[in-house]
Image (cartoon, rainbow, N blue to C red; front, side):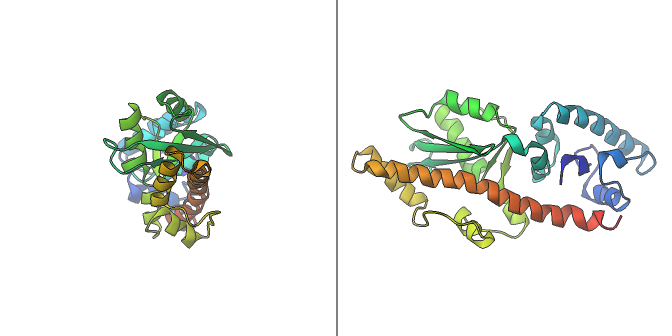
Length: 251
């Protein structure tokens, strides 16, 4: 499903009205005609489509992030997938006031980059990465990863943020990231590393007890970020089938 199939971002259009349009065969912005809705709503849809075409051509994902209802940003993914940034962080604990970020991995355009504390993990590096991204994709990142980074690096992240934790719940997938990966058939190279082990790996490296610990931590963090792309592809396909296809098929 792409943005061009969506009308829900227009003022006065809810899910019920959007499904009505789809069932009438209006499954793309190009299909919309006067007389399908009331005069005011028609005016709103016309205004939205005009502005949306311009902002889509300009690559402005933030425009749609501001206008799509909460939980519907996934509709923009196909349009902005090339510059979407899948990211994950590792920390020494859960409280940003007392703990530190150890690694940050970002996967975008088929390339994965990891920043490490004490080496190249800086506010400037993260700001540049997020500014170059059309949208951010995480798992529980809205509640944890993003605010943790904002607290520790004085960042103000404004890039649209798609949190897979909530999308997974929409299609009946619950639990932690590794559990959901297993349920949908996403394998891991190292099944023995989890969040707690990631903390221990960092401490072993930081105390100079195990130089290989950092390599293992980075591999784990990078796999977290890369697997988010596969998970979003799976969830996006299911949401498309649940939200769009049943109503478009009636047209």
